[in-house]
Length: 111
Length: 115
Image 1 (spheres, chains in turn purple, green):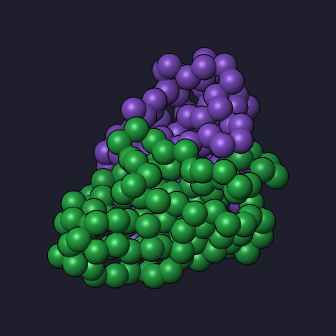
Image 2 (spheres, one colour; image 1 turned 90 degrees about the vertical axis):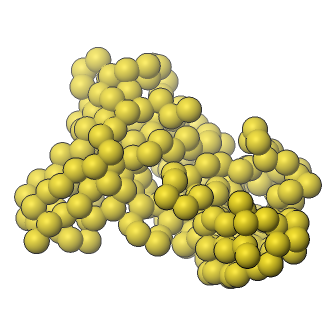
C-alpha cells in the first residue's frame, strides 16, 4: 500500500501557483519524498525529490515540513500543459527501490 | 535522463494468445522495471528485471504469466501470456538513474486490449 495521502483532485488557474499537498505521516528517517506526474496517455515523469531540505529545480519546488510528515509540491506558474495526475511517493532513495503509486492528485489547470 | 522506447505502442489481441513487449534504452542501465496500469487505475509494479539473472516478481504476478527477459543492459522484454480481457492495460517499463537520486524514467507505455 502507498504510504502517502493526497487529495483526489485539484483545480488551478493558468499562470497561478499550483500547490499540491501530500501527507506521509509514517515516513521513516531514511525515506525520501519523490514526486512524479503522468500526463494523459504518457508514462510517468520524474519531477523532484527531497529528504528534509526544501528543493527546487527547473520544474518545481518541494517544501517538506520540519517533522517530515507532509510536503507540498509547488508549480510556480502553472500552464495548461501541467494538467496531469501527480503522485507523491516515499522511497528509501537507494538502488532497486520499487515505486508504490497511490491514486495521486488529478490537477486540472484552467485557462 | 535516459530515453526509453517501447514496442508496440498499442495492440489488440485475442484471448488465449501472447504478446511480447519490447523496451529499449539509449544507455546502459542496471535496473529495469515493468509496471501495469489497468484502466482508470494507478501503476502497479509487476517485476524488476535484472541483467544476467531471473526477474524478481511482485506479489500477485508470476513468471509463467509474465515472463521477462533481460539479455543486456539496454533491452528487456515482457510477455503477457495466455491473455484474457482482464489483461487489458497499459504496460510500462522504467529504468533507474543511479547518477543522482535513483529516480526512475518511464517509457511511453504499450496499450494492450484483449478481446
